[in-house]
Amino acid sequence: MPAAAVRRLTVAGALLWAALLGQAALLGQAGPRVLLAHAQGFDSGRAFEHVRQLVAIGPRPAGSAGAAQTRRYITTQLSALGLAATEQRFVAQTPLGPVAMANLIARIPGARAERLILAGHYDTKLFRDIHFIGANDGGSSTAMLLELARALKARKNSFTIELLFFDGEESVIEWTGTDHTYGSRHYVEAARRDGSIRSVRALVLFDMVGDRQLTIKRETYSTGWLTDLVWASARRLDQRAFLPEDFAVEDDHRPFLDAGVPAVDIIDMDYSAWHTKDDTLDQVSARSLQTVGDVFLGALPHIEARLRR
Image (tube, rainbow, N blue to C red):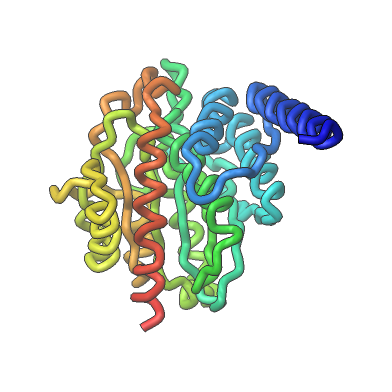
């Protein structure tokens, strides 16, 4: 090989190594900053890094400084992808009095203006007696949406993809009456008032999808055909964490179902650290995030085909 070519390769190698070192240093920094985009498909390493950054913020209950910092983090990451996040602000009437909350909404244009919503909540449960950082419960759903945003940004989507980050999913005291799902209920009420609910074709909800011991059962309130398509994707990929067993749970998909929107809740309720101080980063697995991301992306073309009928 000519000496000049060797020198060019050496310089190129040095530049690549420097770039990799720079990326590693960037990933080690705390606080809102941009993750470098490099991978095709769903990248669980990037998703896990989002969880790590969210956990570093600390508790993130609705109305708190931590929740505001989380919104800034989400907005920064979406902006790096060329996506603008809009805040849907509202004041929720809770058993502890009025609480200022905000959903975050971003859209990836598709061939049709009708929307397929991908949603999850970013808030954590309010506790007075424990330091609850919600790595899985709040962290994993937020990370899932951020990584799906990157994976879907360059895809030719049949429908507009709406990324919807809910505030106020958690109760401020106990999950009774209306002390829960503040953000999703507000979103649906507003969409019904202005008529935009008619352009929502379906909702896919992610909640607690990072558990190391991932166990996802079929949620029975969810729309049957939509659930079937997700579980069919899991079978094709031989992802056995998606079980054929049924269970029912109240979650952010219920207001959409009540409004006539097909919806599926992808949720792992068999989580031993749920609403405990042990819901920490070590309980979250990049492999579990990859499983859920792959299963959804495998189901997406089939969901789009069904919605095009």
